[in-house]
Length: 437
Ligand SMILES: [Zn+2]
Image (cartoon, rainbow, N blue to C red; front, side):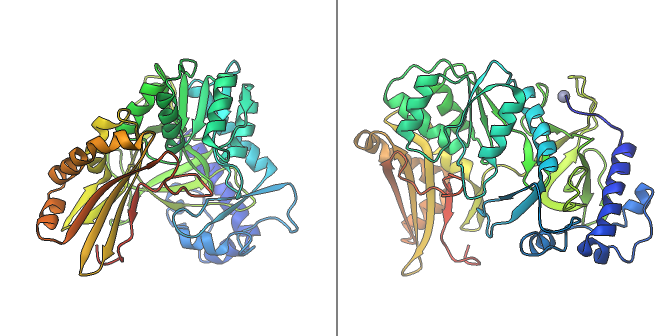
């Protein structure tokens, strides 16, 4: 299972990566030119932070300055982060590094209960350099389970057909994909009692979605597929004792610091700060003290599962917020307005909440929900509208003042726009001009 090494041993490996980077990568040689040699954690604290922009601007193929190896590339794989949050970024790993990334991910899958007797349906989108589908292919093979490489690139009818034909015990995909499968299973009244585990990644899984899935897949366990990034691989994994936002750190794979940038110091257990990652296996293009953008805190608990790798809590990975009037509103409030009708009246848990400025300083708000029976769903349109007005007072007041138009619309299953790269539905679509919010 996961290796466990001391913080000192982990730092020692991080320093080795640092030394290779400084010696062989022009980018790091320049970045670290003012530093003396590093041998203790006090020295390490002098190592400058790597920002997202630096990584973007100096990564292959845009630049070769971060590389420690000689060109042309050999035995390498290039993947993309998809670009759902702006521009796509690419990650180059040698096959050796890719293999080490995958071994950790396979260990995390074993921990959530996947074993060689399982039949695993891989329902991620393939192509566009998106790594999930191909990475899972290798992960499932490492576990020794049976792989159904169905993908999410095909018609949902066909996806369901393969599932009914092969009866997989495990389904792996995005929440968006599971929602539409659940919609179709409920619509067709199918009995799907063979799926024991749904593993998800890539999107927030709300209570509403979770409940919807449990109706279509009775008795199913729903688990997150660990905390990972394309650049660093697996950063946190969950044992049975971990709460939903708690993760064990793989100490022989990442050296992680949690840092308070305002006070320029390392956080103590229980204090919230930003995650800094140094990957201990990626040498071809090292990642050192990378400010990944996630907020976390260490717990100082000894986990009762017996694994001594430290446990941290990731914060702020939930759904989006939007601003209306003066207040920030969580998307949970929008979901609460129609969650009681999901799985009834043909109503799906896949939706999009759209905000758009129209003429005369008016704000047009549309809640679009997918449905397997639009006529029937329309019976509750007014109730949902009323719930939104009750839950979000600024919308109600805006309507009364003639400044807000609110509509609830239903669309056919699969009709909401999906990212061609990742397959995600954008739940919040705020088309208002930035700064206007
Ligand atoms: Zn544990």
